[in-house]
Image (cartoon, rainbow, N blue to C red; front, side, top):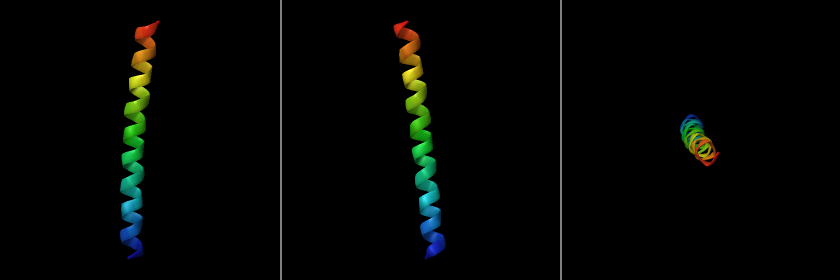
Length: 35
């Protein structure tokens, strides 16, 4: 059960990292356009 929870937590953190990366890239693009 512990291993299962660890797996879920790792997956969740990976998803958050992906979302954050996409968000950062989007904001960078917007900033580049606005200049």
